[in-house]
Amino acid sequence: MAEKRGEAAVENKKVVLKHYITGFPKESDMELVTTGALRLKVPEGTTAVLVKNLYLSCDPYMRSRMTKHDEPSYVPDFIPGEAITGYGVAKVLDSNHPNFNEGDYVWGITGWEEYSLISSTEGLIKIKYTDVPLSYYTGLLGMPGFTAYIGFFEICKPKKGEYVFISAASGAVGQLVGQFAKLMGCYVVGSAGSDEKVNLLKDKFGFDDAFNYKQESDLNAALKRRFPQGIDIYFENVGGATLDAVLPNMRIHGRISACGMISQYNLEKPEGVRNLIFIITKRIRFEGFILFDHIDRYPEFLEFTVPHIKDGTIAYVEDVVEGLENAPSALVGLFFGRNVGKQLVVVAKE
Image 1 (cartoon, rainbow, N blue to C red):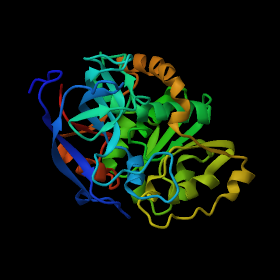
Image 2: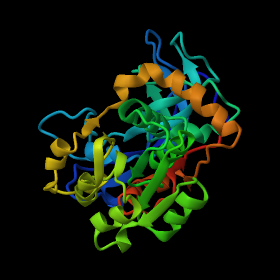
Image 3: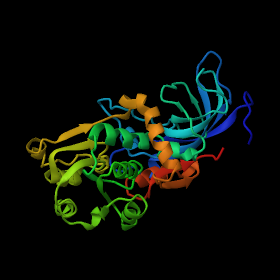
Image 4: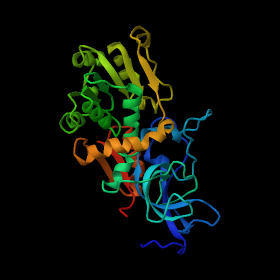
């Protein structure tokens, strides 16, 4: 249907969290509901923005928000009965905000729903380049791509010829880190959870080598075979046994960028790490980061990345699911390795 500013209230489909969870998420923890009484006009006296959501991003950090925390995390918990929120791409239908106009395309935090009235616009970014697919702003040119850029260049400070290992390497962040590393002249190896993903890393993304961690009975030995000289940079996405195997294989003055630890997100009792002594003996710098702290560098990231997209030196793979009703399944699939590439949901084409 055609949207018109100020027209009568419309129904709005949305995905809500039914209850807080422990363990692995299930599709039944979420449900699609339809609500009415949404006017396609921003209320007077506010600086809100009304958007039509086009693409939604499925990201591992969202699992933490599905659990009630006694101590606040860096992102707030979801509220049962309300629409899930996350990164997405949207079109502005109406705005009282001076930075956003009707017809603008934006990316940032929005609701898992057809239409969202966004009152807090601090995390909303107007899309500058519309001559690349808009869906890229859920991944390559959005939060995951920017995460790869900061986590690799700022945290790791790579040098030409260094040896780089990336876990969960075929995901939205890992596939970009590997390509950034190749652009720097590094030797790059990635791990992934299927032979299909391993082939993707080597054939599509240009990794020097890759392996299926599920087929390795001894991760320490697997890393020694691929890095006989040791690892300069480890881009950490999984934690647990992989981190434990990496530490003794690091080189002196190696750097670890702690981006995520997806193997731990669904555990009621996180796994321990036994090889921390190597942080001392190998003089390793192990640093975590949160993207919010670096948002002022997003324009710099765009200017670096967009030319590489346009000239084909950066490749990108999306795993696309159609329909808001399929969003819960897509999100849950992240934690079982079902996605190949960046997982996103198409809510509407325009």
